[in-house]
Length: 110
Image (tube, rainbow, N blue to C red):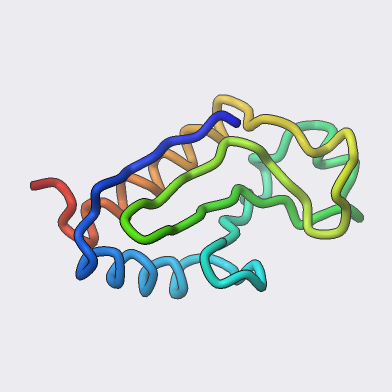
């Protein structure tokens, strides 16, 4: 799995990260997994064709001292489909921008 991982995060900041994710993303139904929806116009051609599979998301997972940003685009309605694929360069940039915004928001830069 291709992913961007930030680890060794202090507990206080993990609480801030989880609060931020609850505010800015969609709940996956699992406590430690959040969905970041791929915006309209940023979906790949096959994801646009498969609108009934959507919405399409990137997963963000939290743990005791980490936050993991996964580069696999998933869909809400199916577990297997051709529209489930690794992020395009634009989708990767979108996810990394979100990750960096979160890092700055909870002051993980120090």
